[in-house]
Length: 248
Image (cartoon, rainbow, N blue to C red):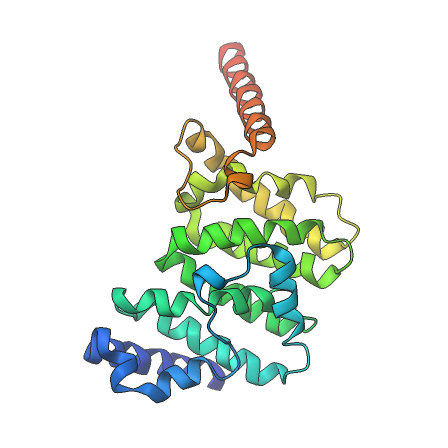
């Protein structure tokens, strides 16, 4: 309870600072940016990781850091994200690759903190965040060399499905790999991806015919196999529903 009160107080303080200083927040309070980047280092979009191998390298660079200090840094980012002025959001997004790297951290509490932070960022910056998630987190589900990576990816996708709901509709075809992970050798991964896909299913009909989100790489935007599989799944489901209604 004490921890919740302390965290809530910090969130209200960040909200007040964001409202007071607006776009000049980091200029007026440079120490705040220093706090945000104590462990998480900014990565410019044009120089940033292009695949999950680079994200894995970032993740490994944090394995020797104190987990609690890393969690504290991530939680500060999470607390400030919903209240940050629009002009400062690209600057905050420069921390996202490092937070994605923490999704595969060996310490479960770090993975959870990173997943919650990314979900919070996605609520405010859905397109920017989801493009990086699709390009870097979905492949983690197939990383048989690291159970931690698959657990973190499953946890993050579960939180995103719960937190974004209908906002995920344009990205539904790219989340089809969840279905393929229901036979993962790790029990916790199977559980999270199964629950995530079950929550995603009601949203799938809405994605049929929806335009693809901008900013996705050519490799992902041309993922015809998953899109075709999704359409077949929807067609079969709708046919079954129609037949059931007629027989009733």
